[in-house]
Image (cartoon, rainbow, N blue to C red; front, side):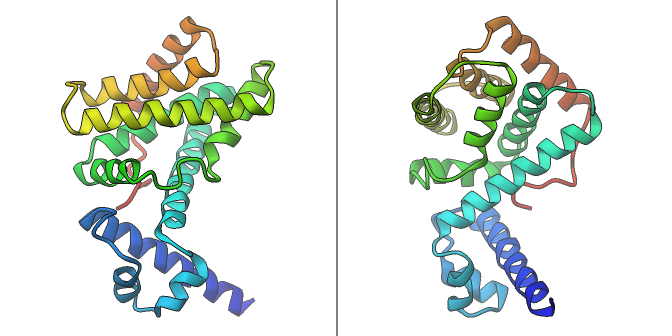
Length: 214
């Protein structure tokens, strides 16, 4: 038990340190050795838990989204799965876009194609959402949705970050969330209404205790 607790603490130390360095220096200028040095652990200890930086990024993204989804669920217990998913996505992108360091990390990860189709919570959530709404689909549909959404999000975010398009942060959030649900072939009016409700929820509820990086 003690060994397991120590291992959990070591892993948490590593990921917490990585988040600080990613925030301070971005993805490109943060190496595994940098994280080991700041966390005061050996390089081999890092690679025991995370073989490469990509795995850290996936962990950070997944844990962040799940914390937001649980937050939405705790604040509004009567919401259905689709609505909670939408609200959590609105919060997710707003927290990332509204902080310069968060935006930079997110941009660099997209440019580098860090684990674009690896294991992540979005595929699970997409499946759950389609099941909840009684939508017919096959496994290939889930893969097409995932790849199409990633490609569109990457191009859109890069253009936004490099100021090739002059969207406000909130407009970007709107288009990113709307694009996903459109690819899932959901009703357009329902999408529009739920995203607006998501913005209303965000205006009224600020999960300041949930951080993307720091």
